[in-house]
Length: 585
View (cartoon, rainbow, N blue to C red):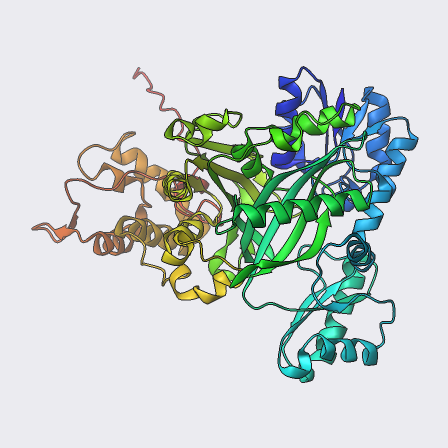
């Protein structure tokens, strides 16, 4: 029995593999996630606190107490929350449980970016020119920035020593910007990680973000499972990931994999990890170590798709003390896979996150299988579509957590086929109640540069006009409904008392071609509502001057503004009372 110390799609993902292997699972949840999908999937579930992650998913002592109470033998941390907390990993081991991840010592070695870079330098892993020292005085940081090329007009990057997710990170292009950038990055680093220290590196304007999946066991075995490209990013966070990386030759792939394995061995790593490299987009043969993520990555499904493996199963077997299931020569890469992260957000508003209820959610049908032989993965028989979900219709996307709703992963025999398949699958995605980035991801896939494999970390700002076109006007029938709802909302509350009476007068079920229109407010506001709606729908007028609806009116809607405080009858009118016929005496 294992406890999954996470939520959302990664918790569901771990539970699925555990169930397939016959392993019981225990879920933990906050008060905001009481009806969440992972809670319903697990064999047992325990509440560990209120909605804020600081009072629930980040409370390691409560997770350990649940593990003891439930009889769990191991803890899977997923990603985020406690997954890279070295103290928690040590506490799990001290409690006599298995931590499905690396030991705390490996996390500490890689958790501090400056210490990690010194280790990588000793292990022969290539590094970007930069400063990783302890002296944080402005004069020192300024002098090191000049050495990295700032004095010659080349930009530099300030990064928090304990940073991640783009926090505590600033790009500096001139000496005049340096002081303000250092102060800002230090404040953000101190607030986010409790450590204001920074490191300085040369910044590549047109860079490729290439990472390598590694796996190590406790018996000394270590392999790499090839590379992924995660260059298309917004706000230093990934949007589309693919494997293998476009334009990477077999020789470069071998060099990347060997460097990643050396990095993992340097810290006595155990379990699944990802070594991230940055490369010049114009010359990817020159790659440099960035950092190592000591956990399973969000984008691990694309690696599963091209290798035909279940990485969560590998995690469970390695944590049980087993050797790696396959050696390096036995691993093969076939096909091409791309993943789109589906976020509840507004891309046009700088990807501002959204929250609310998923009133409707329809996803493309899943086809094919992840675990498939190499000859199948490389052929049209290996076409696959996979959806990793953490929510279902009716669930709430909370303001307290990451707004990722799901991951959509496809596989094709080559990159072009995978792009076509993902574009078609995104076209089948339907969400009502929350804005998403689905249309944005489709536009990325439509750009000739992406289709040609010309990806880099500045891809989104460079193609801003193509990715953020002007918003088209809404369809006429939606304008009609919006006008009617607006008119209804402008009425005093007492006016709604007449709506139900008017509806009873008109009959319980409106008939005729304009029956959908009879659901709109009646009474004093009805003429203006009709006029606005008819004008928006392009209705003709009858001989009496009243709007005459088209023969094929739009479908009837309960209320257009389901998320607002709309005062239309569908939300405010009382239920229709039952009519009682009295017998005359």
